[in-house]
Image (tube, rainbow, N blue to C red; front, side):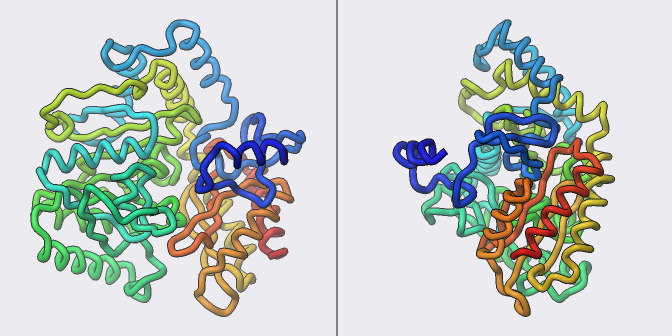
Length: 426
């Protein structure tokens, strides 16, 4: 393990983050469990950053990948591609967007990059509204609109970005307001900002902020925003890279908690749809999706192998009602965690919905973020046999819990017990 770590450091950049003081090599997985190179088994509550959405080594997906790879692995979008068309048809229907078109990419970063290209070209403006504390990917344009300094290494950008209040309910200048007052204040802030801007192309927003620590506004905020945006012709891009496919339990898409004024104009997706295979994409209204006046292709987006995986995974997810499982088992898990954390002054808040749960840590007796405690709990949970993630706004002080959506009640109970002990140890 030490040899592999030293080899990693010798050939990969320093900014490529690794979890744990002694980094972990995962060799295989099954269901909700993974094994390291020493043969130790862990309960996986992070799923490759919300990507192994259904289960590790899901037979239906692995068979679909093997069968397709035995026929043809690659062709590009220059040729008709049956699995790509079939998955696009299903995504278009599920999106809730009228007259939709779908474009596949290889990652969530590329999906958001494409949505920004489409929106700015359609509106002929490089001005973008983004949410404070947001994260949208690693590309030059995506970093340029990211509202979380921990993940934004440069202020240079081809876009002019204006940041809006509202993505974080329990911190900031409006935290003390009621939900209705919070929405009203954020809408007033948006109106004020638009009074000082001209020709904004789009608002991009995560319904639940992922890297930001699984924070979210009250339901209905983005619906209220949409009414204001519509007055100016401004597009709404819903970044569903982490919230899509039923993870929040209550809804298939995160935007549906804000759907009173209709669906977004563009919706980006990735991560879970491939259950570990590299799939991302954009689905949006044909008027916008067809608005580019230059040719384009994707060499690897829509690969026959990844599309076959996506089709098999989506079929499994729908046939086994994993959204319903996320709602039921996720509800149990969050209540268990709230009960455990109620007497721990280290914990500021347990939040989330479905199987997308954040535990925010603070210095006891204050509201000050506690990244040292988060790192210690991450290590202690690993020692107990549980893998989780971390994130947060100004500092990585939020534990991120996002197991595969097939999580069982027994596994939820086991994971809560391990995490509870790790928190008490911290």
